[in-house]
Every structure is written in structure tokens, then in C-alpha cells.
Length: 75
Image (tube, rainbow, N blue to C red; front, side, top):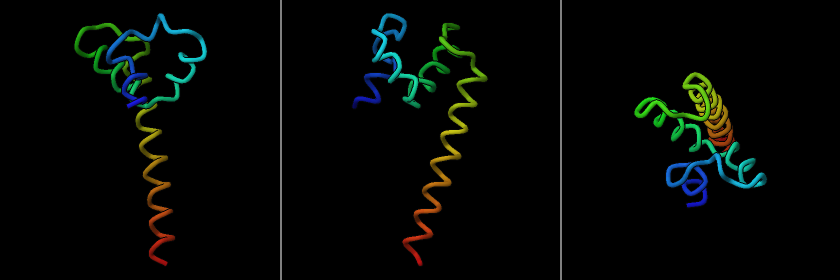
């Protein structure tokens, strides 16, 4: 639930205090919500390319980590 609340889906991220805004930069859901807002209503904090790049990097990192950890379980 904290990831959803800090994603910007319920309220805009521009008016958040400094420490909470920094936490939202590490929330991958923030970039998906921002990309959807940019595609649907034309209002986004980041560019669509940056949103896609961040989501791609996070996906590759987490898939690699999951594959590595799974291979250690099987051995």
C-alpha cells in the first residue's frame, strides 16, 4: 500500500514535502503512473522516454536478481 499511496495516483507529487518527494523517486509505480498520465491526459512530471527507461532498468535488475536467486535454490 505505501508504494501505491506514494505513486501519485491519488494526489499530485509536486506539492509533497522534500523527504517524501525523494522517497517517491525510488518508487517504480511513480514512473508507471506518470507515464500513463502523460499518455492519457498529456500532463507528466518526467518524459515518457525517461519513464520507460526507468521501468525497463528496474525490470531487468529484478528479473536478473530473481533468476540468480532461483538458480541458487535449485542447486
